Image (cartoon, rainbow, N blue to C red; front, side):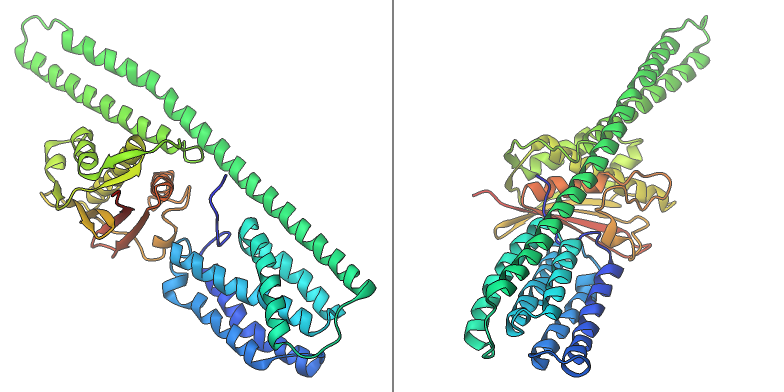
Length: 408
């Protein structure tokens, strides 16, 4: 089953737009229903309080990274309060009249449009229950909804909920299928690259073994070229392994084991196909504290490979010769959380790109990146109940922080 997505199609602009609509829309609707087209019941303090929650969505802390866990939680609470709870409460206070029946229908479809269909379904049910309790305690003394009006309204609301669920499920499945097909195709293409690489390796062996009639200098040069060719083939095969693993983004294996963070990082650094000795020496590894967490050793090895590859690419793009300490990898524990940190001195990441770097197919390297590596990292870490976040200033490098629950 696909993970819950609190904010569909997340972006800072979308989050701020929804927050602005909340901030302005509720006072405007109070004016419409209380002054222009008066309804039996309106509540200005409640409208003002609801409008104020829009400031949370507009704030940079929430809107700058709408894919983060905190942003998702804030969005879920704000939208639950202002849509299913508030609308159900006002619907009951207005005895289910035509204006509020139409408002309920619009609310239901809007809610399914903005968030995951599972969150919307549970939110509507919970909102209706809580609104009914609040109405019983604080609601005005109005005629109850009975008879044909009750059944008519229930049929309309049930139709809206069922259509919202149907469209939500269909849309989620369609997005998942498109992504799965694209990832499968990329995995097949990566796998097919092994054939020409194997041929290149054979050519390298043939060159190394050729008889040059005693021309030692030429023989030495060809031997160096052959070694260089084998190193390139090894590096490409490593990259292919990485892309094939990334292409399994939608079907990660479920097995988990106790993984040592220190051992995982040491193996990842030791097995990485660095392009030169200088590149290898640019990596500093600091093990302050070892800790164990529950996850897949193979998948987390791939996560570290992705992060190392990105950091080394950023260092190369900075156009400076690699120096020791340009990439620092640190492992430490604090309380019940373990942390693995990758800090590089590369080109950094633009502020407007940072909220989207964990989205599939979004890459900071326009035209050269497929945008799957960090999405894969995010999914693997999330499956282990961990988090990954980034801190970066353009031109001053980037720091990726992985936090994982420690096994007792």
